[in-house]
Image (cartoon, rainbow, N blue to C red; front, side):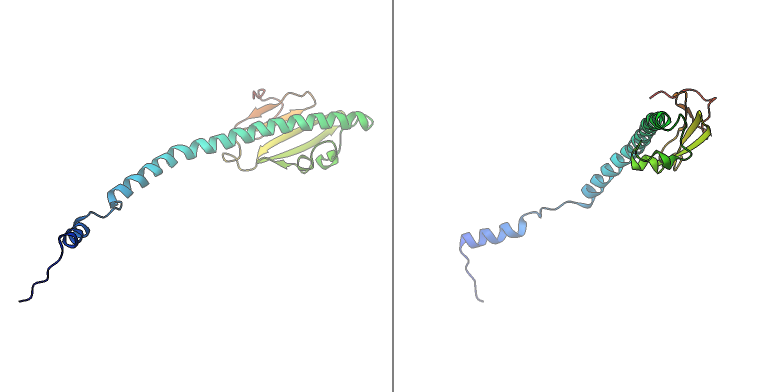
Length: 159
């Protein structure tokens, strides 16, 4: 029988390699991390959606103010008449506003007569891009409704 003699150093290294634990994550640790990430996502997504809706609604109010300013300038410069269509406001408001769509809202302009108009701001996707519908007329009071298109009889909107 042959004996193989290893130096003590080689023998010690051989044992250390075999007995050292592997450095890796266990399945339970990975599942815990995934669970924590899912809980955080579950808590954050509704808040992010709510923030988006709030921002769109604030933007719609701001855009209605821009429309009002543009309409008043148009009125003074065009023989005291309001424009026939929203696209006629090109040059008085931004090109995006003159298209009637901005920030998740659709803006519907109606000329009632030479001295009167109203604009409805409706969320493009109710519940996702906005929850409130807005209304503005020549009186410069923005009104809102949560159940559908707003009108002159609805309460004033607070920012």
